[in-house]
Amino acid sequence: MTTTDAVKFWDGVYASRPAPGDPRPNVRLTETVTSLPPGDALDLGCGNGGDALWLARRGWHVTAVDVSAVAVDRLAALARAHGFGDRVRALRHDLHESFPAGRFDLVCAHYLHTPTALDRAAVLRTAAHALRPDGRLLIVDHGSAAPWSWNQDPDTRYPAPHEVAADLDLDTTTWTVEHTGMPRRIANGPDGRTAEVIDHVLLIRRAA
Image (cartoon, rainbow, N blue to C red; front, side):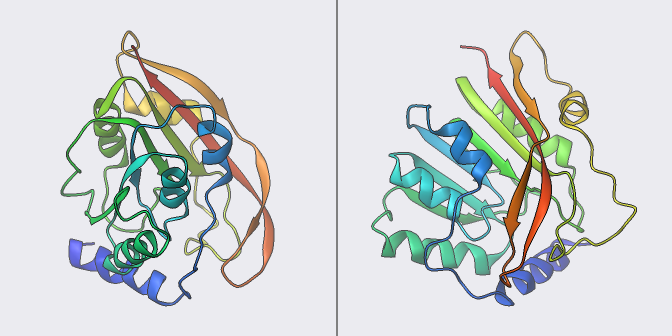
């Protein structure tokens, strides 16, 4: 798919859902980042913006990007409404073609899956290089499909965290895998349904 296709697909996904007034953060973010001192964060594929707003509330300055202009515009408006207009920059980026500039103490990539063209390994490798010394890259992938997911292909394979790490092929003298996991949780869908899902969690730290 082209960039136009990607924008059309994801704009359609977000436009079809009501805009939450106070979107919830991802649980894997809150359990991983709470103990870290605030700094500069990059949220790749920010979606509804729950992660960006949660980070801003805790003193982080967040660059939040998404291919969907609908998602980006909603987040920018929410950040202003919640008083975080000076802490959240919402930008539209097609990561297949461009990557936000800057250096970060934290890069989050939650569920960075798409039916459109995207070299995920290259994007995440670039994200690792965008970390400051002692910065962290948090990658959370789907390990299963929820009933409301756009991807209901029964043949979808979900690589384990160690496979994702291997695919990034990062120099182990500079980047260290701090944590991997495949926990289960009860997820809430946009239509109010709940389901048990599996997350694939990978946390990588850049050497100080």
